[in-house]
Length: 268
Image (tube, rainbow, N blue to C red):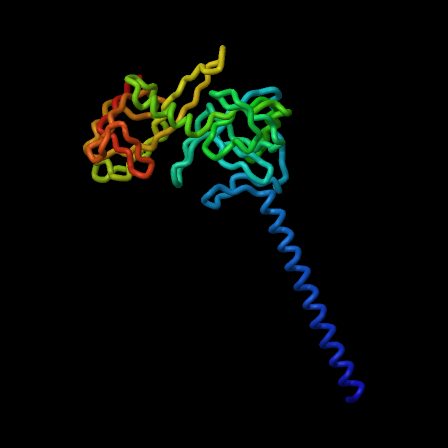
């Protein structure tokens, strides 16, 4: 083998080695970036990005020593994320009584809303409502950070909240207001996709000297047979009657079935 051929072979080996090293470095950087993203980004159960800690934050307001409450969406990777409303498929229904915030999980002491028993933050699960006091930082792009400053976190468990909701449904005069309205007309008739959100209010004074409001939303559908009295506008108080003609029990709630209105009347 002559000298020229040896040099060519060595050059080829060097090129292959350099390409391999470059590929390994790119792969490693990508892997590290993905690992960072897995901890800096929080997604909901449907894969939608709801919080990104990798973004540069611009604080627009800091509210000190304030109390907030919100619905728990996630509790993992050292963070507790609360939402200011409910999700309904592609739509969401936000309520001013709740806050959107990301909370550092410092293993704060948690206290059950009803029993007053103490737990750690593992007690907090998706669907619970938490109440906490501390400093709220609001950012330009809509996300908030909340520092509990080691204060206790009050936890209203999802099952207890569902029991409270059922009592509201069974009450004679629940406080109901119109939320977002989506009425689709087809030749002046309401279509099967026409729906709105009703906001039910729960007023509770379990905590001495404090009245808590725990509202919740219901997605209800209008049909061509629905009797509508008054102009349906957001914020209006209403009385409703549900269509349970295809349900076994008038008191039953079916989360996976469409809740249809027999009538709705604007009273204020």
